[in-house]
Image 1: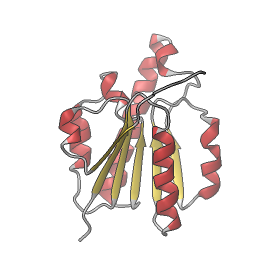
Image 2: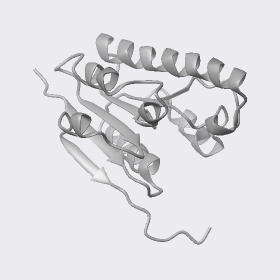
Image 3: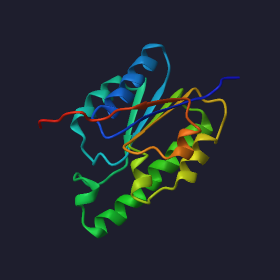
Length: 164
């Protein structure tokens, strides 16, 4: 029986998604199947389109409809995106429940807690869904202590300088 590993990249710095993508490429190079579900990135995050060339080893999903950042959307657009985020989160639960990949990356999922779209309990419930998946990777700016208690590997990425 496999033992799951829960890994978190969080903090105010840039590079959390890049670190998670690095985990995806590493896992795929070892013959593992990887699923990435992105949240709060907008419909067309062009820098990730290259990953589509790595299918079926790495599968990338975005459920968002709007191109702009969530915080810049109209209220009606935000309501629609919230439904899309919840659909994506339910898809993540299905991926874990069915065991259809070895590594599941939920990019910026912790940001949904900050926006009161998901609760800490929702994330913990997802983590505890099964014991026998290989690796779950979560990213976001903030890491609640109760989620940290369920993580095996935590990397904090802080911004020291940004001239852009």
